[in-house]
Length: 64
Image (cartoon, rainbow, N blue to C red; front, side, top):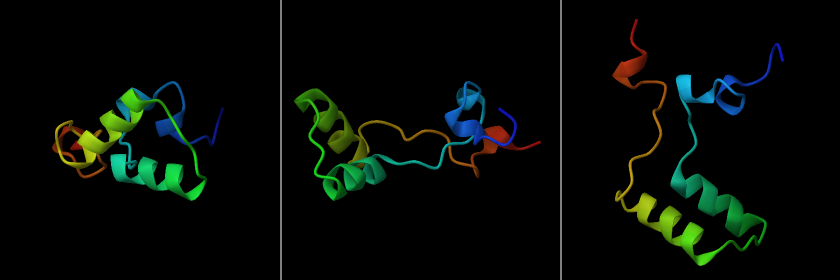
């Protein structure tokens, strides 16, 4: 829909994403949300750098 955040719409893979693994873990903690062990492990290893973050707005791939 016009005006929606493109990073959360269907075009998301083609636009920058400012979310981080740490940000997700912070939301989980804030709302006392519990997820599966596999999801928690993935997020925690993402924080340590084992998994690459999604592309941020300053990534060179978005240079024109």
